Length: 498
Picture 1 (cartoon, rainbow, N blue to C red):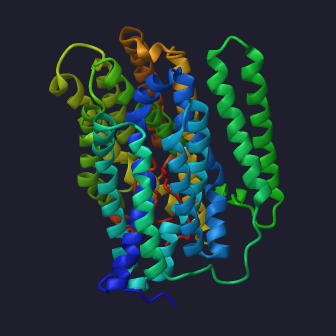
Picture 2: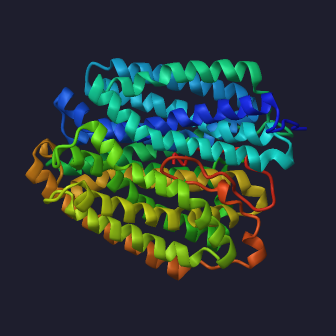
Picture 3: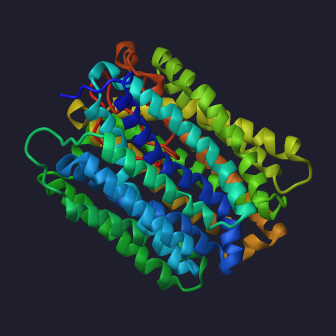
């Protein structure tokens, strides 16, 4: 029976271990985007390689996230959390010493494997270790402190890149991992899911990972002239995705039970998640590059310029979640994407004249307000709509939907907007392509708002009344924190990234 208290020394150490562990992955996610232009210039590579620097990590994370949660439940959450931390740190070392882009991309893929092992464990440890009456406090502390890590990421990354090298972005994970391991070994208790060990759906995990790899490779290759290089992997990926669905329909213990999608609200919320996070991820990928290449910002200036988004999220997300609990999520899930789209339209001014306060800050503020309006209700709705018996898997699925949306967006958006090859090194050409990308992203976000208006329904007031605003978070940087109402926190998931 879990019995830790947040007021005790050991309880605080357990929170510290999970915050630092998941924060390590969150920090990595925020700083890599700032490092992309420097990496590209250092290795003399085109946009396709930079896309893979981002997507190699997301690919293995999204493909193995569900399996990672199951491994923790079966073999020990503390054990898998520690293995994930060691794996992530080792891969970070490989990233830092990478002599060329292919090695960096391979190391980033290994980082994603580590992330798939450690991120589900961070929340599962809190769920399994703390007494029920202290669980929300522990999760709230985890969420708040994790938000600080995300907020510090762009500033810290920009400073490290400018002062020393982009390689320190990865080396910084090594001392963090050492601290996490020391605290975990000394203070974190072991736990497994009650009942008989669940059979691992390895076949399903392999199928979805290869499917995402084929689809992503085909989409990135769409910028080339060889049609076969695009169509062959794309068709193979789609075929493997169909195979994955067949496997899940027949598996005794599937990593993604298809029956969960019988809930119309759950399916609708995940559809909106996919559309909105596709638009968000494309913008997040390109904006730091444009700030540095087109506007001439240093990595530190680029990282700092995006900081208001995180500050707005920290200040307003809890209030947005509380409002959605009172009035229902439909209005905010409809209006939020519209505000995000307005922010993306303001980003059209980035390649033009003006200083930070006239050309950058208005877009950043409106974009952040849209996220604050939309993210908490979106995540909470997806998780609350699933049946109680699928609480954990619902959280993992919603997290994975956001990750896959980002994976596809980063592959497609540069190609669709003409940002291919080494165009990102030429300010005028990059600025022109970015304007197209911003318009596409804004249109996709508007479509997400329309989709929410047409498909999302406000549940009865009592269904949402117990959703704590501290228990939802952004799929870009952190996991959804709770997957059903008035029940235990799921054993899951993920850095919902993202």
